[in-house]
Length: 438
Image 1 (cartoon, rainbow, N blue to C red):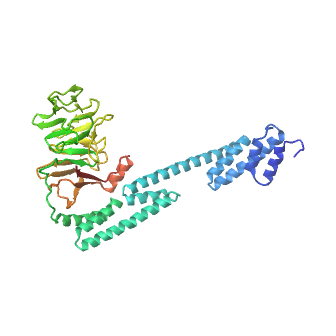
Image 2 (cartoon, rainbow, N blue to C red):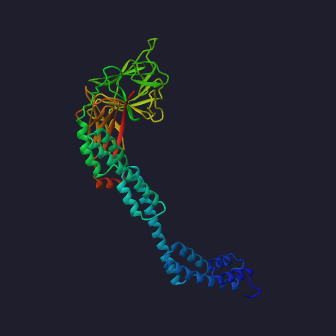
Image 3 (cartoon, one colour):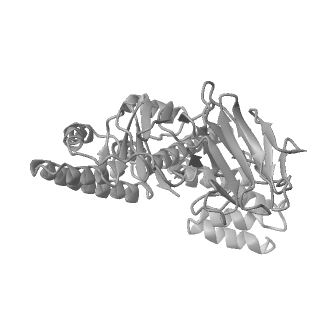
């Protein structure tokens, strides 16, 4: 190098001599004399060497490093046709790599969702399809550990059946079912367990002759199975729907007769009507209720929408207003908990029409029918059974009354379930609903 050449030329030349081409290029690109002859010549030399290195890295399929080298070369010199073609190949390879990484990430996320929902076999297939990645290994290990626990529970279930102990077998079956919801062995064991459980006498649990008989359906609804329903504060023992707020102990009554539902405002000790509003108008005495009416007690801004969403059913629903929901004075109830006025049947479905819309329901419809003996369940395109303190009830014609747990399972084969997931739907294969007397 000439003694008048910029200092960075000497530094870059030394880097080139040591084979540190990228460092030499960065020094030259930062030069304050970019048009100096020596700087230009050295940039051309660095650019040629960078293109050669990029080609070698591309042959080794080290695409990201090749991309860095070719981009640095393009800053040092104008790429010729061959170098531009190489640059295009590298960019295409990087896009494919990015797409593959995104696909693997999606596949592992799907595997995680399948694992959380208890689909061990599907989750393992998805992890194996994703190949070896840093995130796949721990997920694969977690799946294998769950499979080992699943196999242990199956073995304990079979041992209990051999001992003629169907209740213990069902306990282990449930533990296995929580880990893996779809397995041929589970289905085979269930066919052995259910008949043995059904043969065990279950004490009858009729509708309570005394008391209110109301119950919570999970946190979804307060169910009141009566034709006359009293709304008021929890101070009164005969209130069916206890509420917090500026109310009298017995504030209003809801009646159901052949004409339908109506509301009656109770009188306070001064013989005045307790404040109640129907569609914004004060209730003086009694008023009929129609689907879509807005009912408010104590505070005209707080209340419910009265609904009768299922044609042919006398059962009604008080849906709390979104922003001004009354507060139920019942442990376990939430602001979103509706009140179901059960007269004949209660329909659960993933979408309307239904008394309670439950998107995660794994079948088209579940109907709870009120009878003199208790609740009967009917499931469309699904399997259901009751878990009661006295045992398992799987016969649809056998009535129960809370406390109980309703278990609903989808009747989908593996192909249908995977198709549902691929279409973007939820994979709700099993649902449990607690029914608790309150």
